[in-house]
Length: 468
Image 1: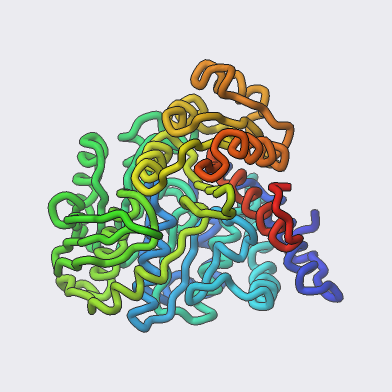
Image 2: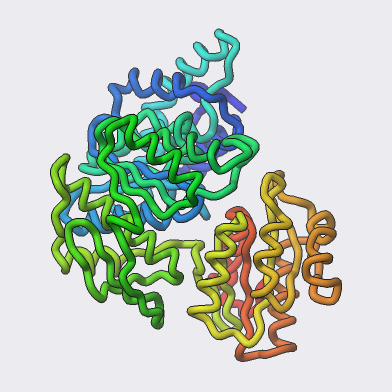
């Protein structure tokens, strides 16, 4: 794979150029393989004129709920009349989904132009790092640099930035968040972030900036102790769910839920949020409080206009979060990939769906708690089809089967050689059992649900009625 400055894009079609750029970026160290330093990203940003300081920033971390909260906050800010940037990860179809301007993935021509402008700077910093015995910028570091440059180039008024993993050493942390948001913290990425909740909380608290506004979700006692200390040390202005912020009421309904949310500025009654589950109501609360704090610009938060809140939440989508990608039978995909996420998912399923039978298509990555994920899914699934995504990090299907059988029992477990076969098996099982009242849930990793979504879209284009 050529170095960044050696990529020859001239003469390629836009699709070919985008693929070439992406192939170069993914040739670098993956986002879960990083060194604990921000120096490389800082160096590139400095040579680009520090684009990360050209706009206000809402910075989000946590274990589950970051992406949905980020998307809700961005929608509220945009509805307020400000131009927005949104950086989330991972992507489901195109890498351009990670960098959004005004709610849309960065345009292909802008992505290609941006790369040609930024790549020589990335190459300079790569060379410096390698000369000093270090690595090139990682996959994730390059995407962060591209996002910050894209937002300055647009230009946006506000960037909503989701960390990749952690906080202190996350590449996004070269920006100074005007508002930091800490979603619920649970065990995940222990290999990189720490073996205990306290260790993980210390890492994630690194996005709290001195004197900045901070919005914090309900947490376990051990996590709260860490966050209290971080807020006090940095003299941050914190708003805490459970005391300052509250989901007063919520009523599940068709297509989402009706919520009443209390912040320090106001109580917003009967707001429709088109997402399922108690956790999405809490995510909406965090997003609302974060936007109030941002617009207060260092003062006391004031209430947003009711019509702004209604329109902002009403326009929200969260792909891959209890998303229906097919009907008859219904096929849902969900990005839950740790036990805490699975627990929240199961609660939302029980509350908002009435399946007579639900069949799971499950694939899990090697660095995840496969036993905990499967145990959490067991009460919700009548049968599970074990498979593996195309990711090199996926647990092989036969190994995952060996974990699943003691949890589900052999008669409730099937194995599929690949994902299309797994979907076919799951659909056939639903048709045998309860044709009209059965559904399929694909879950376990983001790579798995990304592939399911691509397969379903391909079937739609072909006009096919089968899963493959």
